[in-house]
Length: 358
Length: 243
Ligand SMILES: Nc1ncnc2c1ncn2[C@@H]1O[C@H](COP(=O)(O)OP(=O)(O)OP(=O)(O)O)[C@@H](O)[C@H]1O
Ligand SMILES: [Mg+2]
Image (tube, rainbow over all chains, first blue to last red; front, side, top):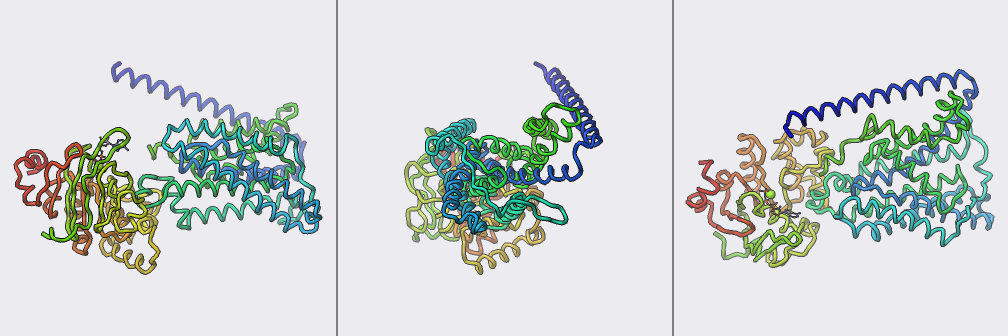
């Protein structure tokens, strides 16, 4: 083939891609805009209801963001998606349940709500961190240096293994966290009444993510993680223990998933062996949305995704009188992902990581 | 020459494999305290592999690396950096998303002597005033020459006894190449033994004490710098076009 025809082909494909983007983009903008106007104008929801949907979206989105940290940080150092990370999250929520149940039966749960929640949080974090570290050691470390597809497939296997391990150990039934009186009702924050559970979720997520940010940016260990993410060979030549750093990344990601597990149950107080699947996929979506490998991106992606799926169905689909639009939040979430990837394949804040590191 | 002393760094009969492929064959190299030694050789002859073997990044399949008369092959890179070997990698390899300051800190990553680190940082600033001006700039946005300075500074922050340099003048403008070799001499005068890989054989040999020539993983020639510069075989193979 001559260079001229190659050039021609490339040019025409590029035009087609651009045309495709342009068409999809215009259609999406029109559909979203028209639907939003119609549903707002219909007055089906009051301003307060819209506001509650948004707050709920932020709460759920901050949990996604916490889980997304694990995906994005592990991707940063190993360039693969740990699909078992949803199960790491589930393990925290699951073991947390047994502790909550025990505390409840001992009468501590409602007597000492703050202490109880802190204990559940600690247990959830410890469990998730341990599972993440064991996973790295058993499933991923032996595959270091193998083609990237191999650990990816392994992680899917690990995901099933953990699900059915938990099912085998604790049964298939759904376990309900004991209700806690102290977190029922609302607090008035800046004049807005917000569910207490949501305030706790959003507040804790902000504190934990700020802590993570400082850890990664300001501490020596954080710096070594960034060094390994950017250039593992050079990091090793500086004397950094690359394997040790990777374990720490899994540990931090696991701890974040543990926090997420504990917080999730404040909003959705049930857990079973399959509970990690959907939040895991959503958090992965959030990480990709924000730009995989980028911690800020994962935060942004998580909160955006939470908002999209909370507000989106009523706002966009409601405008078209789509039946049962409230049950279509997953459709909205994944459509948002598809749209972002069409227009910005690297995600909102993504750099071309894969190209930077061969 | 100080041949009656023990070498500070020595490769004895070192062979290195990548999987089944042998890259180094029975390499013998000796560095004495205070020397500048140059390792010459064509592309893919195994120069970078020699340096990586010294730093423990790859483990020799045969022979041994000795530091201060003690066998160190088999130790981790971390251990070797702590014992006083550091490296300016090929193509500088700065952490581009980190600031200059963070890059320099990576060099002293394994050290705990705060005062010593601060002192060495001042030393680096004295050598490279430019680095000080650009401390908070992202390394990826530095010019090639500036990146070279930071890469050398980063290696010095480990306070090495032996400094390994992999093609330090690669990709630099001629004026910067000359400056670069001056800096290497200054570092050496401060007591650091330098082992540098170079393609720029003429310039390198002009500051080196001795040199080795590597060909498909074997040392085929080793002599004083003057000897190598005068060697007809060398002239033809490595110095020819530059004369
Ligand atoms: N990680 C590796 N795995 C397999 N083979 C390798 C690896 N690294 C280097 N090699 C091979 O070893 C040989 C020597 O490589 P090395 O990088 O040491 O050469 P070099 O002399 O530094 O070359 P250059 O002048 O191009 O930098 C080459 O044939 C190279 O392909
Ligand atoms: Mg090389």
